[in-house]
Image (cartoon, rainbow, N blue to C red; front, side, top):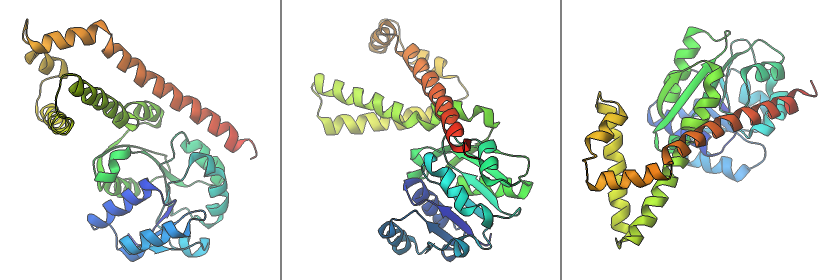
Length: 278
């Protein structure tokens, strides 16, 4: 790997920078970062990670093996217009832009680029992302392996068909927020039953960690694990009964379906907006 350029300098960009450097994926001097105009942000990243920064497109993209788009989806059109003439057939374009399809990126670039779409989540900032990846037919085996290795520096990776990325967005892309929402409820209940908030938070976090690890190491499905800790007439059964009365499981199902549908809707709107002037 000779050179990677990241367009965008937000939290996801920093997560990738941190992961790549911590895992010695690339030398810091070969990792280039830019943004639209926030010079102080670039200076912060340069000082913190010793990466290279620039606003010169030629300097940024000349010889780049991989270019990562990590900007707001609405800015994709302007960004592609700015960089497309500097991209070659040897360049791998990686997009972490929610809702922007590979086809749209191909149309915006007006060329046959190798493209990979990625859907990480916010846990990338601590190296625990669940990242789904999809590639087009122009991507070589070596490029696919390279981008997989790169995203592994911030967590788990899985390649899927692009048509399923909206579902991944609704499930694991938005997933951390669902668990934070659940923890909010547990913290509020702790106050109601008289527990110290600090103690309650520690207990909740450890319970989540233990449950996640049990799901990870056990061969049993989640519904069986739940039943095994739900004794007839016991405390857990009493709690589960309330969840069932309020149709909490169905609400979560509808939550993820709605998020998936919203991802499709936003993607369609973005495509229409971005390609209307082509």
